[in-house]
Length: 76
Image (cartoon, rainbow, N blue to C red):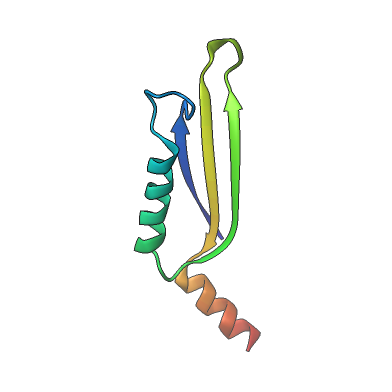
């Protein structure tokens, strides 16, 4: 299993990358990898406390085409 991380700093700031841009980045990656099997998607948000820094991270856990093929062979 593998993981792909996408992140965005200061998601609530007008100066930072907007969430629709992060969504687009994820969708482009998914479209470029049509043979993967997405197993889990997780999201976390952290705030830097007094510094005010924020970070949004989306983790996509997946199996690539080779892993999927191996699993099919081993279960047959």
